Length: 465
Ligand code: FAD
Image 1 (cartoon, rainbow, N blue to C red):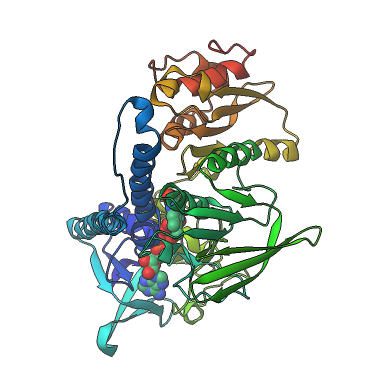
Image 2: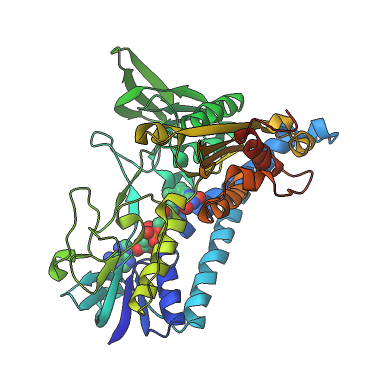
């Protein structure tokens, strides 16, 4: 009998298992694929960042090195090597998780886990073999899969999801992306940097529509400079493939129709929670109409000792959200009283410039009727950004108009994915914009842009604008 069984080894599941083991719980983890790490390590965060980094190097070598006085001749992409490096990066990360399981004495069971009853999980292994294990507590961390539209038939060759986009055999000539969200834009940037024409068809009137509107507008400008084209407020009505040609049909609100032809279509309209094969009914665990496992604020399902975390439950589908939930549930099981502040889970888009955000957007503050003031500062006015040649973007700080408490920070610019951590710390400690404005930030760094935006938010006193 285990103290804890975790089903699924993504960032939610493996982190829950490690924390539980640290707290002295006898822990098992079940993963249906041979490699641990889930979507994030195998077909998500890590491989996409590996390709983003490689393609950024190429793009810089082709377009910006000459500004720095570096002349290169006969530059070309070795795409096969790029993909093989990406595989190696994935392998290093996946092997790292295997090592962590061993180090923490967590039993790893490979096979599909499905409930037999509320205490027993059957593991279906290779060669029709099964094993049953029992747990005093069980965490469901089965994650998510790419969503699709009912009329699109994914052939996974030319009509593809993010999973296949990370394993292509060639750089597309013209990649058409359905969906202007984070995953589509990150993968779109990879291929645009490598020379593909990239068109994005988005249903909403802005890209990255869930983020602060200023971010979408600024990012679109930068991605247009990269050569990407956008069809906003367009509803896709069909996708057709003829040989090597694919056509995406869409129409806008005025019923005007467009056909965008390319050689690959990436469907990236979001992800759906994944519970297939889990047999949750056998344990009496409730799944809601969105396909998510229903949980309360302690991430407990309707069955007392069964919890669910990560992409398979409500909330943003992000690896670090899943990790925090994994830690929270493990600590609860061990008798502690942990807490997650969901408002302070940062969101990042790893395009270039990067977009990073935490707290309320301006639209949310308006909707809530909270009075706020805004401080903005552009990277164009930063010495560090001018030195590196990364002058696109800005930092926007939203602070309470009467108390000056920071309510939201939205950044688009170089290395904002890393810079947002300062805003998270500030908001966790309920800092005012004035607090940040009075702290010394090393010069010259990109972080000065955050300080200047805080100065701008407090009596409009930015120093370098
Ligand atoms: P998952 O990582 O999906 O893991 C679930 C695991 O459970 C899988 O390994 C699955 O095989 C296993 N499983 C499912 N059912 C069973 C079963 N019955 N028995 C046994 N095993 C089972 N997030 C970020 O925060 N930052 C990023 O930069 C980022 N980039 C992304 C890029 C792409 C292209 C994609 C697709 C996603 C990205 N994400 C990113 C999202 C991130 O990958 C997910 O939010 C995260 O992986 C969710 O973790 P999880 O543990 O809930 O589930």
